[in-house]
Length: 313
Image (cartoon, rainbow, N blue to C red; front, side):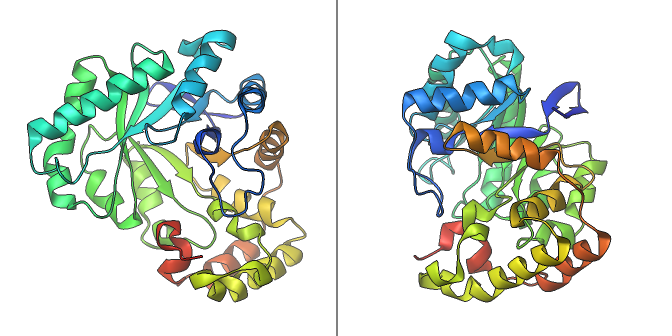
């Protein structure tokens, strides 16, 4: 396993995302939520391979409890970087004390389920429906308090929209940032924000590398507003043939080889998928011409294709 050394932290280049362990998730996921036995197999395969970072959230069904029970039985929690997240409801966003109480209650529940005295990495789960100015007014103080009180080690944010990165990264207390990025969603590449996060020494987690499995769907399977994604998927398939790579390897290598990416968050519903992602981490780099073609072909993608939150299927 390869690791990033940043800010005194030892972070595996792969982070196991656990949303699919806690609830049905993913447009291309035909298996559904794995049972406890299979979930433990997935977590065990990841840990045995040297993946020391797990991504979860209070809102991921029972994922936190599954992780906590697994770590209690099989692993030493201090050797695992657990990344969890909290939300602030619209009803509390304009009241600092109410927001702070909501966050502290969320972290109390997370620590209980995870069976951790403190959370190694804790990210605010941004919702684009929230007024970002108000979030920026109260969030830094809440993260500072959480860290001061020993509830979290590292504070940060999981952005909903790439445009939010520039706003959050100005705050020193925001040490870690999780972003959506893939060969269809190049917004953080185009505005050079990946480079800026690297220069600011931020811990950068990248999620949605395969756009929740959209890349692996046949154009004929697409429905709703994703119907218009067919031509882009066909272009992706053709480009993978030119590169003599699978779509998965090409999409993964494109993100993996960017300077400043600390870890790629991937999901799995069986242990075999853990091994597949480890193979991708060790796979070939893409040719610079293929990289240029990606950045040309997919430079101006419609937002309703690259934003799962607004998909209509």
